[in-house]
Image (tube, rainbow, N blue to C red; front, side):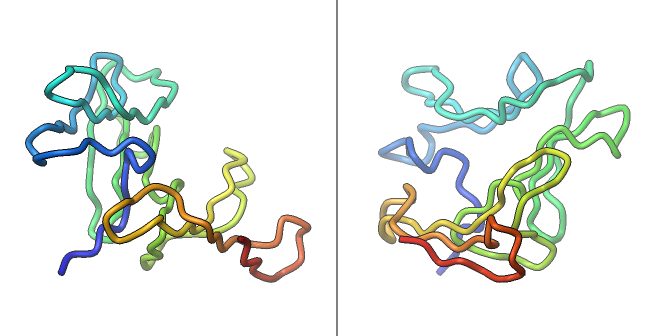
Amino acid sequence: MLTPIWVGNRENPILGHHRMSKLTIADDGNLAIFNQATRLAVWSTHAIITAKNTTVVLQDDGNLILRDASNSSNILWQSFDYPTDVMTPGAKLGRDKVTVLNRRLVSKKSLADPAAGLYCLELDPTGANQFVFKL
């Protein structure tokens, strides 16, 4: 059994055959998932793209990265900033002081439905050095 470590369109899954969806770099340089039947984007990284060309890399640790094709150190978006319900080595939890993103684990509704479930695990937002489990 395979365990997905990240779901891009978890709140709006494309129902039906897997060939109905396409992961691609959109015209604006963002990574996007398109519904092939409707030709509409159902999810996008929505990164502010300043690069002329972007590229996508799946690192050995499982982090999916959108970066500037001419400057590999310029990371425009990364899946480790948006964890779902699986923690992998190298991933981080807590607030990123630069991007102000709060990285936390959120359960899924069920094995068949990847949408956000009822439970959340995150670092205590008060700054206490502890994890908080929320319903």
